[in-house]
Image 1 (cartoon, rainbow over the protein chains, first blue to last red):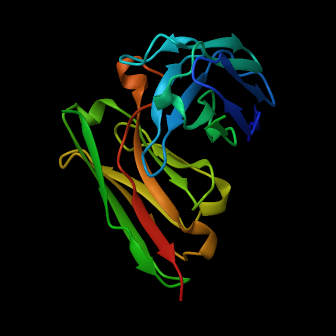
Image 2: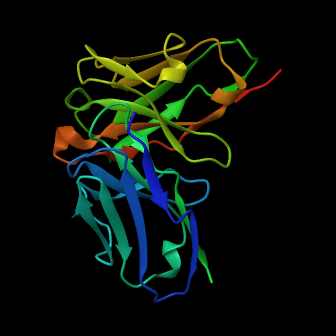
Length: 107
Length: 121
């Protein structure tokens, strides 16, 4: 199975900060990568698909980039509602695999 | 409204069985592959299984092969996960999720609210 290594595992940031989360695949996955946000007790929600496409209804402060093995999720200006856990997911091949998650906390 | 609603979770003894259901509404169920994803308490997300739109192909993670069976009834717009020989490590919230590829969106574009499976004696 393809391993997804996400970093950092957690970070502390302030409202208005620019936040970057990275995900590395153990082999090339083209651009078949998505980013998800999960808040406590809730189901995850899709933010970015195909590495850089913003899902409908997601604020434009979220953006994604990368291809092949290295990917990045950027939040340009962190808002109070963005404090959550973020996961990458490769949907290139079965079994789909998630990164271990990045918890974004308030500084 | 596009919606997925899981049911069937609960407490089961180790070695026991359980069947989860996921009722879909608000979209053409037969147009989409469907998945099960789980999350153990305090842990990350884990893909469990997937099934093609017409149910003719399926996929599983190694740890559930031979114990879990995914199926769907397109006439009832319902996805199932039959779980057997349950182990403590299967304890998790189980989510059904839509593979958005049928609508040109890669990944899980719709999720259910989740159903908790507790494995304990």
